[in-house]
Amino acid sequence: MKIFRLLFLIALPVYLVSCGTQKKASAYYLDKVINDTTINSNLKFPELKIQKNDLLSISVYSASTNLTADIPYNLPEAAASTGFLVDANGNIEYPRLGTIHAEGLTKLQLAEEIKKKLTQPVELLRNPSVIIRFLNYKITVLGQVGREGLVTLPGERLTILEAIGLAGGITDYGKKDDVKIRREKDGKIEIGTVDLSSDSLFYSPYYNLVQNDVVIVQPTKQKVKMTDQGQTQQRISIALSIITTAAIIYNIFK
Image (cartoon, rainbow, N blue to C red; front, side, top):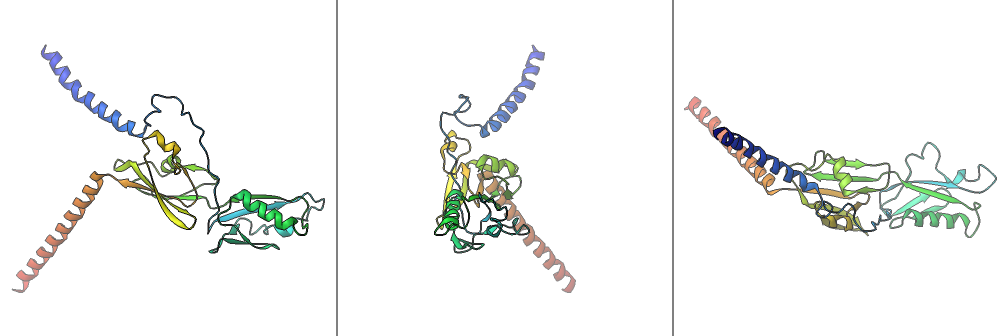
């Protein structure tokens, strides 16, 4: 019987630790996804809108039999990688077409504007095609993550889960249910909050990030308390050092 009691006492803390570990891991899981294999919804991926300071790759092609007809309406090969900068007024300067307002438009809308200028009132190019891509699609991730900083992607779609994953994940001191997203929209700054542990995350307008979003993972109360304690200890240490130094100087010169 003593052996069984001993084995029970050894197994009990192991069981409790394993339960605690399992609970901690499940914080990343979603409420209803654990029971359901799919989420019955049609997820919408918002069309990105052009913002100030965006860099755009714009290429123009035409149906002309003259292979060089569209060259004057494209950036020189050496400058193509730098793209078109959307200036402080939300405009781009386009070769031979002049100033075109781009801010607030989608890529498709801007492409249509360029096509109009190429065909109206004079047909400069025959049946032109315009291809636009973002060259600086980036997100900033700050706070309690493995690696703070910029997340730059060659593509044009990024979810908040992917962004946090690329930033090294949330640390043990990060709040998964209170992640802030700072977004510039129509010249104004808006702050959104998402709960990564809820399946309602998929319906949030902040699930799919847009260029220049800032994701901020808030610290837990434990982290804030530890930081405050560290600062207090640092102040005490500095104060003791000053007192000790003053005492030594006093003893030298008394």
